[in-house]
Length: 153
Image (cartoon, rainbow, N blue to C red; front, side, top):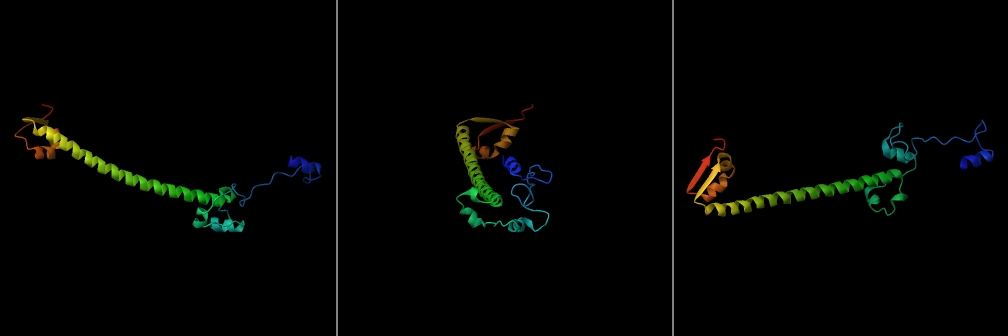
């Protein structure tokens, strides 16, 4: 509508038509990366465009993300993602350590239960693989009679 209004008001290019849509430049938000070909990195590119890069502390105090420039919204997103990733990593480490401890406790409880059952037996039979796997349990029980046989024979 704006182009039609401009054409009707006499605006237009030299051929009498409406003005073409503006071509995005490296300084336009969202069209190009913040590192443009003139060099200097993202901070210098932002400074050339009149944008101020907020510090991490300032980003933490933001209450309205839509009032931020695209660059600062990206920085805030990166800060949030990094914080969540760090918390998630710490949580996984803590939970995995707890899991390993619970697994060790379960093995101990199972060995105690199995040992109580085996102590009541007069004869215990194992394959060579089972005897090797439960060697510490067999040493604890110290059965009077133990039969060990190769499973394939």
